[in-house]
Length: 379
Ligand code: XIL
View 1 (tube, protein in one colour):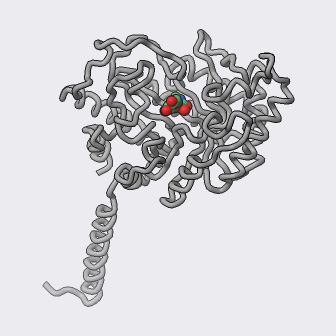
View 2 (view 1 turned 45 degrees about the horizontal axis):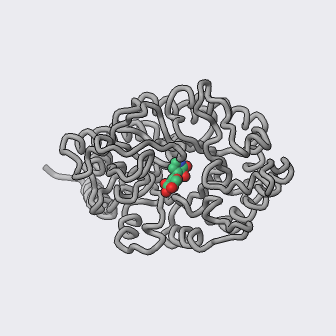
View 3 (view 1 turned 120 degrees about the vertical axis):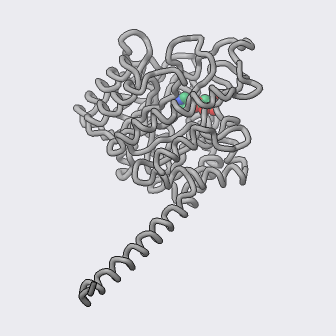
């Protein structure tokens, strides 16, 4: 069979192109060293970092840089970490945090500008124990927010502006925090306006826990609608997603993604982790003041995670990430609250001193089975 010169040339071209393509595919696969590359076309993969890394841990930092392309500050940008008793500033850890993100070209998140926890009472009350005036609190907020957001303008790309303003009582009314008691809901608007004026390019979020569940989800949607009606510059919503291995169901998470996105907001999973220990309180808990007593039966895996639990955990992470992938167009980022189990706050919350397995890497910084499942979803 003879082959025309033109066809011959075309065939050669196609073969070369195919060879080039497969070498590109090979190059891409070879570059896919961590989760962040596997999910590069879906959403950012983040981790919260705390003292473990900020105090200097090269091995853990290498793991962070290999796997994640976004960071969140576990504590160093909270009011009580940043401010001295007389209202001065302590920048050392926050600067280290931002430098780390800049060096590694990461999407750097700020957390958080107005929250009822980890902020001293002296912000809200004067020496005689009375509330400060609305004007005085607004002024303190303006001063705090312009200074922090201004210092990291153009570096911190997204801010949890207000954290956890919705309560957990029946009907999920607004939380009766000091902020709310003094200013009403306008404390939220004020925080957003000041953050936006200080860094107009920053992506501004409202962040809360339990909003992956019916009840608090609807209260959050109602709040976001009110904010939007008032013209508040909110760009995204943070679903903390402190989940349990047994609940809530993935359909609950899916509903939150769809409903929040329908408000025209980007969806961020901001504090994702998975509690595997007995949930004796049977309610979603994440208010950091909640405490329960230690009992050995509440700490069943202190000598290691049984094989069947490791598998159950892996399937749970996989089923949730399948939903995330399905809604990748709505999701900006999935951030785990820590890197490895040894650093997870869930070893101490809501009971101190337990052994939890909440993250993708274990106490030796090796991947859990869940990690392999997440890679396999994108292979
Ligand atoms: C937690 C930190 O992980 C702990 O180290 C600290 O002791 C308490 O706060 N919701 C939030 C986070 O928004 O800031 C909290 O972080 C976890 C719950």
